[in-house]
Amino acid sequence: MRKGRAAIKRLLPILVVWPLVCAASSTLTVLIRNFETLSTASDLIVLHALGGLAAALAWFVLDRFWIARRKRLALRFVLSFTLLFGLTVGATAGLFALHFWIYFSQWHEPLSSRIGLYQAVFTSASAIYQYAVLGSRHLIALAFPAAALVALFAARHPRIEAADRIR
Image (tube, rainbow, N blue to C red; front, side, top):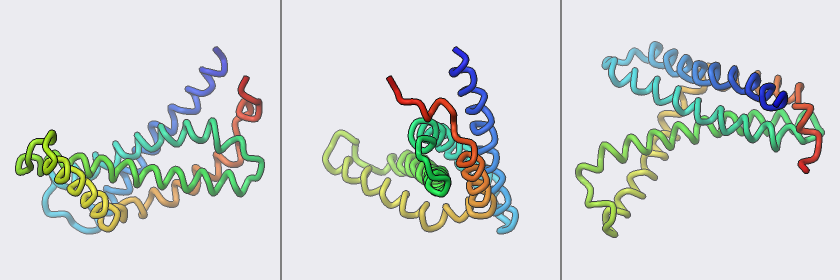
């Protein structure tokens, strides 16, 4: 029971702080670029926060069961940083693709048809590409350096129970 509570105490800060960092990074780039429409800016900020939340949850599981078991500090740092930032970009791109597909589905064939399936796949692929080119820059302002700080902290303080073998 104690190990479960300790894990929850480590999980809650990252689940609260990382989405806020992603949203703040997006907000900063929105303010710098002077978005004209506030609804588009708020959608973008919420999208990055939700992507950060999904990524933080996946990163925590990977950190606890895979990254923390590595012996070398540099390897733990690189894995933690790469996975946290990569999962954030990937989760946000996936949510953007879902939003993109829902918007364009009104002009698509039904998903159960072959053409509808092609349209869904290629619409999602183009949305992921579009996010990778245009949307990921919103995370570079604050989330990129924050991921380095989180990775440094996680690498220097590995979980004690992660060193034990799973029985």
